[in-house]
Amino acid sequence: MTKIHQQTFGKGQSIVLVHGWAMNSRIWLDFAQQLAQNYQVTCIDLPGHGESDKLPTFTLENISHALVDAVSAEKSCWIGWSLGATVVLDLASRFPERVNSLILVAGNPSFTESADWAGVKKEVLEAFADQLTKNTTATLLRFLSLQVKSVPNNKALLKQLKATVMQSNSADEATLQGGLEILKQADLRTTLANTKLPIAVILGAADSLVPDQIASQLLAIAPRLKLDVIEEAGHAPFLSHPEKVLTLISNFMDEQCL
Image (cartoon, rainbow, N blue to C red; front, side, top):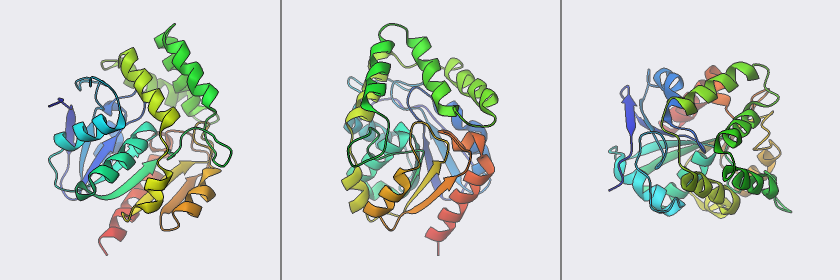
């Protein structure tokens, strides 16, 4: 079984936090400890990231199996950020008995742009994949800069993102390439449309990776989901606007208990 590093804080309803591409669970720590005032919060490192073991191949199926095997809570609200949002959507489709709700933070069920869907241009992700083979560090720094582009306090946020990457084991190139391949290829719009689980989506109006134009598209395919767009937030709203995101999560969790 793949060893998945995790830390758990607090007591109450179970929440699992799943980070994004090239990051690790440290990115959640301050936010998780605030959330843990009311819930049991588990932060995990994706396989091959931070202190978790690598997978032979970094695919959604393998990731979902590894995470479900690692998390002990019978049922949880799974919160995924960016690539993590894709992961939790996939996990919920494979293991609905382990999920009671989903929250997608700066997530897009089809991350790449297409004729009928807003997203990142495929060429941008392909350029990242190409640059990784030449200079992994420079590519990661460029990606981090994109996450906070146009956000008012972007310098402080970029410093925090860099520290998170540097303070833990970096994912190797094969794992990073696997993550980019998932973002390029995965299309979970049908999964989102068909799920009966309660789902919330939190977007940033200034996100340069997940454009807020998808808000209306998401509601068109999944009218039941709860959707909020945070003004001036970029790709990491839980860092730039933690109090707002905490309130949105708490309100959503409370609604599930009614």
